Length: 390
Image (cartoon, rainbow, N blue to C red; front, top):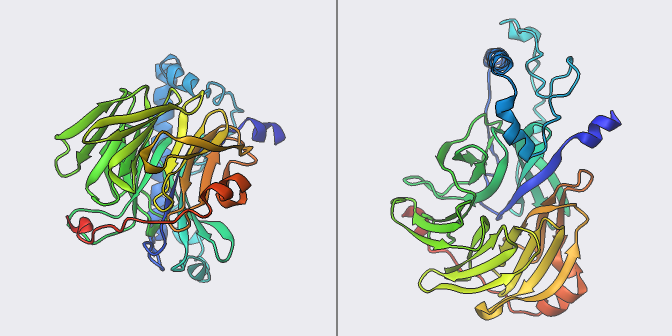
C-alpha cells in the first residue's frame, strides 16, 4: 500500500479564486434516477471494454510519445486484477436499481448551503489517472477551508478562469477550463453532480477574461504569441509575439489597457495594447508557472516557478518590478497561484508535493511584505454595470 501511494501522481496544475456573493446560496443538484445511474455505469463499462480491445490490437507504440512526456510509461505495469478507473471491473448491474442503491441523507442539503461571505477556490487536481475540478469553500471569518463539491474532468487541466458572462443570459457563476484536449470546457459552478460541461470553446494554453469588458478574452499558447479578442467576433484579434511559450497571461485589473505574460523562459513581459511591450524581466530560471497581480493593492505582483520559489514584487506605476521577498512554500514544484478577490493579501497556491500540494496563505504574515505593502492605500476598479449585458 505504501509503495503504491508513493508512486501515484497527485498534484495541482491550476487554481482560481471566485469572489464572494456570486455563487448561489443553494446550489442546484443533478438528481439521477436509480435506473439512469445503472444505465450510465453499464454503458461506461461497455465503452471501456471496447476501448481496451482496440488498444490490445493496435499495440502500445503509438501511445509512448504522450505517456513519456508526463513520465507515465509505467502506469500500465500493474497487477492484472487492478483497475485504476474502478469501473471496467464492475459486473453488469441489474435493471432493478432498488437492490443496489439507497436514498441519500437529507442532512447533506444543509451542508451544501453557501454563505454570502464564502469565497470559492477552484482547484484543478491530477490524482493518478483521474483529473478533477475541486470547488473549495474558504471563509476568512470562520477560518474554514473545505471541499464543497467536484467535477470529473475529461482530460488534464491546464488553466482555469472564472466568468459570469453568458451572451443573452443574466450573470452566472461559470469557469472555463483548458485541458489537454483541443477544446475549452465551460462548467456551471452552481450545479452539483454535473456530468458534463455547459458548452465548449476552442483550445488555448492560458486565458484571462477582462474585468471591465466581459466579452474580451486574453489567450496565449505554445506558438510564442498572445492574442486579445472579442468573443462575439473572435476572427478579429490583436496579436503580440513573446519570449517563449505563454505559461500565464493576465490583464492588469487596475490598468484596463495593460496585461502581463509569464513565459516558459522564466520571463515576465508587460504590454500596453495601444503601444506594445513596456518592459520585460527575467523573473525565474525556469518557467513562470504562476503569475498574479492585485486588483486592490497597486503594484503587488506575485510569481512562481517550477523551481519551487514564490516571489513577491512591486511594480507600482507600471515600472519594472522590484523584488521584495522570495519564499519556498515547501510544495515541490509550485504550478499555480491566485490572489483572493475579497482579501488583497491572501493567496492560494498549488504544487506537486503529495503531502502538501495546496495551501492558502496571508502574505502579510511575512514581515518584509507587511512592512512594504501594509500601509499602501487600497483601490479597486468597479466593473461597469452594463458589461455583463453586452
